[in-house]
Each structure stands twice: as structure tokens, then as C-alpha cells.
Length: 277
Length: 211
Image (cartoon, rainbow over the protein chains, first blue to last red):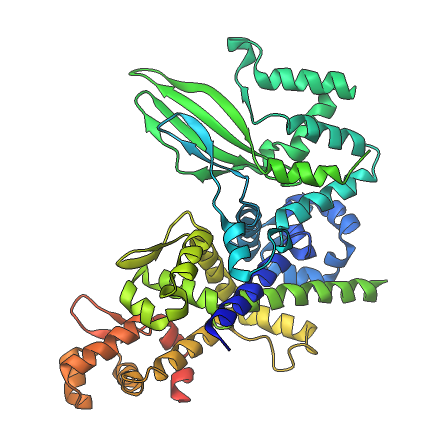
């Protein structure tokens, strides 16, 4: 076997294996990604993973079956959960919003060229490469498209994707933020109530109960510290990273403002084109 | 209905297990390359160029790998901590931990007995076997490196002067063998200059004894 074809063969095998672990292709990954969930929900949505045989294996993987089914800290299931997020970003890198630049106090969009380099090495069209993020987004939207709230979900996401970033802060102290404006516009145009907006937000933007993950090293400047976190939402579309600025003076420390920065925008826009509701 | 559900779970489990096995460095040349760098922290460019010429010598492949996996190619080759290669090798650690769990292997083997009639392999042990095979196949120092390793395992801890006496090999030659053993993480060097077998070699001693 020539050297080139050896690398190509092993790279294809690796990509296939990595992609087969993505939540759109494997139910165990899908379950790991979406925990914690109520046991009754799991039994209803994933009956094949709720049999005694399945539970025994899943418990070894680090999934705890109690009234609430969750991942054990430090378990394989947790590693798989982190793996899924990293691989979403890795194979959908071309237009992802990548980083916070402390020198200009703003986020920057960087192309990592992972997909284009893979395509060149494998001598295939860019579109032939797997994209676990796009597959997952498409699966989630297909699920909603058959439900009564499907149209609202699609339109909510379309409105969200019109933004590159949305600032938010304490409205009582600093006035109406961009996030408040976005919320009011969604409520008005989709004819929903604030509770429904919060539900959409938990599903696709941020569910505070799921925590957040530090994404990048975040720089500090004189009197200012900034941090960037990936916000987790129920369906893990990884759409937002939150950049927060904290100020600190001699005797005062506090949050100045935060910005939701949109990620995976171009990919999700393309996926949304499939859904005309 | 229950049988259908168990059948579907078997499919999902089988898909997961095959994917994890395929990612393991004993089965994939790319992850083998990445994991060897990770095990060493960094590796001399020249050493890696000899071991993986098709990746390192070819400028086109090398640069593509640098971008795809976040590898820094300088005098020393290392994985950037924010790159996918670094993350992937950490995930491989988790795969090893999982497959080293005898209970996990036994339970999965009993469910997937048609696919794994000899049982689900222990990927950590398999990686050790591949490293030892790699060591053996090194044309100049391979056979003697294996002798050195066996001697260190037999005694438990040896200094280079002890090895010189026991094996009748020159110091310069022994240093090359020990460098190779350290590269494959089969021995560890202590602060006093003595060498002892790595934890994996101690754990799976029978792999060496079989040779």
C-alpha cells in the first residue's frame, strides 16, 4: 500500500469512527448528550435504553438511573458528552465563531481550515465530509417540525440567526438591553408569551440548570477580566457562547455586561432551509 | 416488543464498541501517531521523522496535520492544548479506562457474543502489545531493546551500569535501546538514573512473558 493511501485509509476509518459516535447516529451518545432527564421521559423516548439489559451496561458507562437519569462525574459517559461537543466544533469549523481576543476586547471569527485540509488530504469534495453538528441539528429540527410548536421553533431560530452577537445586562440598572429587545420582538412576532420565550430559550440558547463550560482562555486587562463560556441548552445546538466582562477597581468588583455570541450560524442557516413551515 | 428493544440496544452498543475500538491507537495509524506524542509530551522532530516519515517528512501532509489536529512541528513536536488532537488523545485515555474494566468487557461480550466470540478486546493491553511489536521491529536496536526490557522487568529496577554488566552491551548502544524504550513508554527513568518498567508493562506482564 502506498504511503498516501495508508494515511488516507486510516484517516477515513478515523472519521467514520468519530462520526459514528455522534448523537445523530448512536442512541447511547444521544442519551449521554441530553442528560439529565426524568426516568419517565427516558422510558418513553428511549425504550430500548431502558430495559434491564441496557441499564446494566449504561450504568458501567456512568449513567445513573434514579428518578432523574444523569451522568456520573468523571465517567465515560461524561467523556463522551464532552467528546460530542468538541467534535461538533471540529468538523463544523469553517465558519464557527472561534475566539475572544483580549487585545481588541472583542470576539473574532477564525477559520481553522479543518474541513478544507481534510478534504484536500482525502481528495474529496468538502461537502462529502461528515458534519456531525449539521446532522444533529437536522435531527432535532425534524423532531420539532412534526410537533405543534415546530413553526415557532424554526422562526425563533431564524430570528436568532439574524444576529452575530446580542448584548445583555441588568435592565433595571442599565436600561433595556439588546437581549430584552430580541425577546420583545420574538414575543410580538411569534405571538407567544414570556413563558414560551423562556422555554424556547432553554431549549436552544441556554438552560442555566445544565451549566456552562469555559471555552477559551480569556484574557485580563487593567481593571477588566473577560471570560467566554459555551452555554448549554436542552438540545445542545451549541449556538451561543457568552462573553462576560467583569470590572474590578480597588474596592469594587462586579459584572459589567455579557454578550451572547452566535456560533455555527452558517451551518444552521443551511439546515433551516430544509424546513419550510 | 422487549426482544425488539433488546435487539435495537445490541445494534447501538455494537456500533459504539466498534467505533471506540477503531479510534484506539492499536488499530489506527493516525491516533497511534497522536497518542505517542501525547504520551511523551513532546518528541524530537528527528525521532518522529524516522518513525512516521509519511506524516512528518511530507510537507503537505505535515502542514495539513498541523491544522487538522493542532500539532506544533518545531525541533520538538507537541500537541497544542486547545487543538483537537490533544482532546482526542484525552478521550483515548477514557477509552482505555473503559476497556480495562473487566466487568464492562464481560457484560458487553455476553451481549455481543456473535460479534466478539473471543470476548471484547482490552484496548489498553492491545496498545501495549503494538508498542512492543513496534519496538521489536526496529531494525538496529529492536531485539536487544526487548532483552533490556525483559531484564528490567525481571529485576524490577536497574541502572545502566548494571545493564552493561548483565547483558554485555556497550553503554552507547544501551543508551539507544533505553531511548527507544522510553519513547514507547515501556520503561521509566527515576531521579537516581535507574530504569523501571512502566505501569502498563507491570500490569500486563504476561504480554512480555509470551514473547
